[in-house]
Length: 274
Image (cartoon, rainbow, N blue to C red; front, side, top):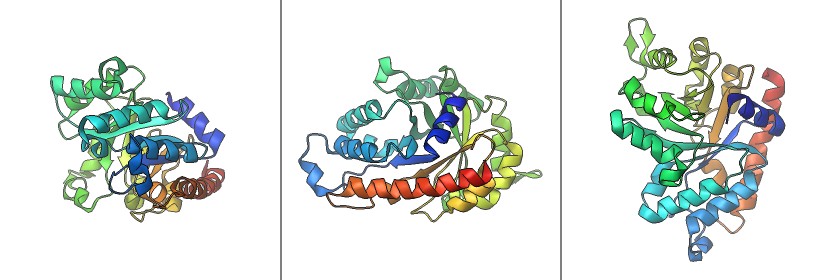
């Protein structure tokens, strides 16, 4: 999916919602456990319920890896089920060098090899350009680079001063030499909304993947006010607040209501700031 195609979906749906499929076998409604593939069945119903409100889906790969081969099968079925017009993110946070990084890229981008065909993957930048470039060798695929994350421990390194710049700023500036805004996005936590203006100074055209709205307490209003650019430039992720809004048999219907509520708020901000 190109940047323009993503923007077209945002304007069509009046939404920049990304639904996080952090599907935990221990948290899904118990009545689904009788299904042959309960993880996929949960995801299928969540996708059906939220697809009119969401422009992207983000499975957190750890939840699937933890289940071994069955988890990977559920992940593959999920990716194949997500509507084609929706942007897909493998939230894998990979980061290694050489052949290893190339194999990670093949895992998420080469359907003929792994059965998976994501639009993008989250990548850790700590090991530098040779840990990121193998992902960019796949034409039309995106790297979403960790820049300023929402977890408290992120401050251990990301906000260290390197000369007159914080480390997260240097990551953004340096990585723009590897790919432009047509292939590179950045992860910026919603709980760091006060830094969005600074990030927009160094990355005015790039899309930002913003987790932390909802259960983690981030403000959608602040993220939208300070992070939106002329093509929206935001994918705001919500996971638990949508997919676990109900633990009963009505979980999909309740998830739809939660997604619709977020979408309606996003529509307001699109009208205000776009």
